[in-house]
Length: 347
Figure 1: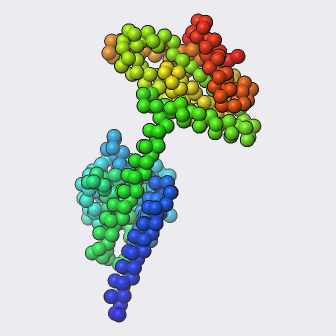
Figure 2: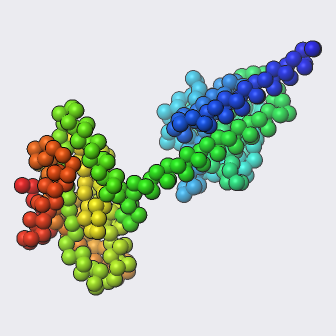
Figure 3: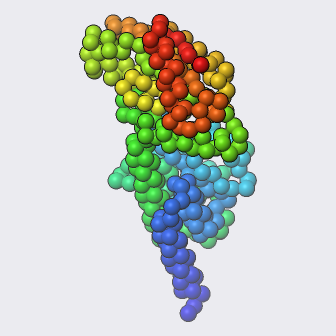
């Protein structure tokens, strides 16, 4: 076998190896980023770029952002805040057209932009850019920069890259669909907060964690005051929309490690890890004031105001089980309901 045929044979062997590895990767239970990294590392081995990256499309903003970046000579931290408009630069052009592009020399490429190079102080010389498409929809692009191997691209190399990009797009789409299904199973469809079923799981986990390391956490149970009057006056559609608005208000005021759920009807529960009862009271007062100050549906001429009654319980001071903790906070909330409402009870 002569040298040319041997080289061709080795190339085919490498391509088969890539597809075998991709097949194995797609059947694993890795996270989507782990799957994509494994797929793209195999491609990088084959094409030997100086660095490579995966950019995903932000559909709402119609921008590309760097999801995965690999390469010794590139300052990856500086890429986190860089975004390219769809249509901007080589990657943006590929995302816009859905067509692959090989740029042997960026000096001769009208679509090339030095925006990224200027930020990272990197020098791009050549680019191979492939769209990640599924059903003609571009989810992102794979970009290989400065191919180290001086061997010219083979006529089948772009086909190989396109096929790999399709596998990556399928992996990404499947992962997103799975994440969305998972999200829907734990989310209340009216408020966007967690549902009661997931709340119980979170409470069990927090009790287990706090019990293990001797930590504390607090629970806020609250119920909207006179919510029935909203339904009676404005109808159940406005009532449901109001619950959704309250859910968004709660979410916007959550601290990073806090969790919130719609417990049922117009009742809500917040889990505050690592928070004492006194700290929970301070936080609850801020939330209460925010709710009191908000007027809902003013743009529709309604200006609905709603208040709430709050009960706070702490682990392990008030209770050591999930049900006891919920019961303690619920009872305290009802003390407020039976009195003046729009207040907080902690004992």
